[in-house]
Amino acid sequence: MIGSNLGYLFLLGLAVSYGGAVLAEPIASPSATSKSTNPVAKTPVSSASSDSNETRQMLNELDQQKLNYPRAPQNISPSKTQAVTQTTAQNVTSISQLSDVRSTDWAFTALQSLVERYGCIAGYPDRSFRGQRSISRYEFAAGVNACLDKINEIISSGLADKVSQEDLSALKKLQEEFAAELATLRGRVDALDAKTAKLESQQFSTTTKLYGQAIFGLQGRFGNTADLNPRDGVKDTRDPAATLTYGYSLQLTLLTQLSDRGYLITGLQSGNLNTGAGFSNAPYFLNDTFTRLGYESDTGNRLSLSDLSYRYRVSDNLALIVGAQGVNPITVFRGPNRYESAGQGAISAFAQRNPILSLGNTQAGLGIDWQISDRASLQAVYSAGNGFDSAANPTGSGGLFNGPSTIGVQLAMIPIDRLDTTLYYLNSYSTNAILGTGVGDNIIGSLGSRLSTNAFGANLSWRASRNLILGTWGGYTTTNVLGAGLSGTVETTNWIVYLNMPNLLSEGDLAGIYVGQPPKITGSTISLNGVPALNLPSAISGTGGVFGAQPASTTHAELFYRFRVSNNISVTPGVLFLFNPVNTSSSDMITVGTLRTTFSF
Image 1: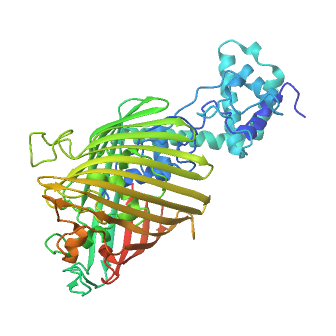
Image 2: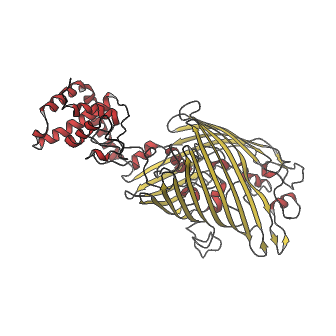
Image 3: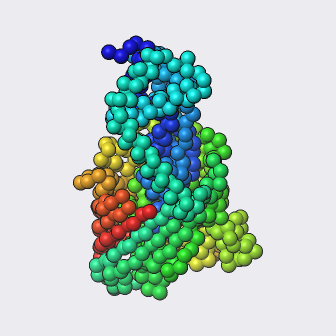
């Protein structure tokens, strides 16, 4: 039986089993599970394509416990995030620094002695000790080694009298008992040192990390005939895009750490995917915003800038986001759908997120993310069409203040455990008759008209279990139509319900079912010089552009299953059904099939 004084050192084992954090160098806690208070805004996503959806997806996968717990500005996976954002706690100098250790705990006295006599205990970065965690013999040996090093340091500094002979004797017994494990650990440390030296000599940059996602899609839709020319009950327009297509979408993200609190994010994208009929195929181009896929991106195989933003943590509860590209409600607001991703989640553009968050398709501006409490956060954003354009250029987007713009605010809450909610309001100014959502009834006025839109939306996501997530959202917009001789308002609504089933057949898999109504004009009262005109529902029907709403509602039904091939490769077959496309009951149902393969790195 080991002597009572050696209880401190032998209780090293008890301490490790009590908390797993006795090492002199503490284990870094993944940002996905640490309950810290460092809000950081999300990385960007394009409103109508897959631009930088990779950087958005990584944050949603990163945050696996609760919506409002802060997220780190990283990519792809928790392991990669740790490499960039992990924090290191200071060694514990007082037992009171361990937030989850109480004086009534059975190992309290032993822990206190280890801390005060030898200082070989460290907590996790959140200052917890996690006393109920079990350990392996290797972890125990690592703890023994930590205390060995500390005692050797004490002896070498001429303070040998501070270490009792009884403790040294017990420590010697522990060394003999765990000799094999200690030798293995030292061998691993040597191997890691060699690998680290090699990586440091070959690394891309000491301050910048490269992340990426490449999506290859094989997709097509069955032949169908629409009643759009005009909408009069007669199917007269064959789908010119009913064909099989193949293409890619590539997204690269450079994350540069400029300081302990600031990150510069540079995003590049390239692609050749476009499944639409195009404006040259009137009126069938109206279907394009209903059939668009989430991973479509067509830059003509050229690299284009999708993100150039700087994120800075002003305080433990407040983050600032500013950028010339990639700053908008999508990238600033926190989203409750943890599987929102063009490469890893739903296949359609509509099922990515509430379309009203894409109002104006703005890109440059300023945002804030404020962590109010553990269960509530507030985000706000001002975003302009394109910060690179000159305000003096009337054909451009008008710079930061003289062109399309969007102002938005969102409150994200966890009213009860497992239930994530968001409420948001946006005000948008756009030109050329489009809302800028890229989904559903996106054209709502006449060419050249200007739109002033107020939008309201809400999301709910309930984590019923580890393998079952139920969610829904709804959105409403009301738009004042402006222009020479123009007046009136246009209203739209959209909604969706979804079911995500992660790890259904295998760890890392994801099944999804999404059913909803894309944005639909529910009322249009545009007048030209006081006479009803240019109202889209009536224009499609050939009735002179009189006041009215769409005569039917499109129902969007989507099913997909993501197979996880490896940590970096997934394959997702999916199918999309559109009933009453373009809100026209007399048109054929449209069926879209996809096979998406995603490589992430």
